Image (cartoon, rainbow over all chains, first blue to last red; front, side):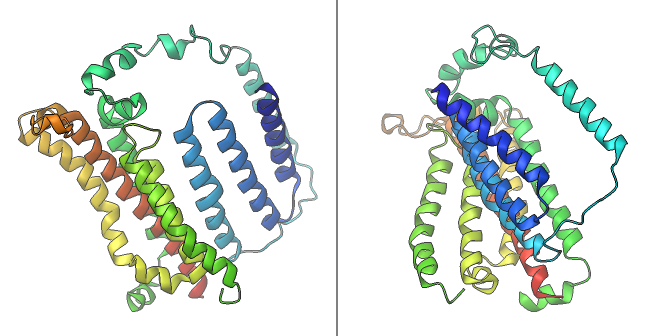
Length: 181
Length: 146
């Protein structure tokens, strides 16, 4: 099991570095698709199959298609910047160091004494069986029932994002859309 | 993509199973992993795959943009409407327990919580499918109108 986990994490790092060094945008998009698939596998290893579904469908599927269709509107090559930019380099280095420093405080994975298993309310898991009349999926129970307001908000965010994309991308060609309908 | 018969045939074979899997993730979400968001994106992925292989005009015939536009808001309305319905039945907003009806319990007819979660997940699934499809339409449609 550990072999698979280290292999996937290693491939994730390799893919990320490859994407960052790449100038050919078409290949970079393909590599982001690969990255999403690897992330989906990683989520599966972390026992989060629903997150894995989402990553595979959105990350590897839909967003790759959207990036490719964006690419058909723009160019295929990233412009080369010859200038060395010290300030962004410094910002990235400091942020990276801070993130790595932050991981040092993370509790070990799968420890039953982790804050996430103790802090919000372990009662969710214990109560959901009686509250939900035997519905086995605690994740769905928490998302849709205990935190139904949150999920309503998230759905509204998705709708708002969709409306925003429509408003931005459709501007100035209403007559074309009308003709198609 | 008329030059690639293998891709067209394989796509036609696969799409029903992708749709079926989306429905499985949607309606089996209480028992297995999944739910509205996941089912929505899988359903939208099937529509987008159809659009990629058979062209934008074909997919717009299957899922007309004017319907998809309405569905974007309809999903949120289903979700919020469930909340309003629970208020109307005398509970709090999204308090599914008031949907309890003790109807055919021996046949495992869904309890109030089951019914409420089912309805709001349907709302989420509809909105996510519609938004993803609509974003694809607007991106892909731009290429055709210079």
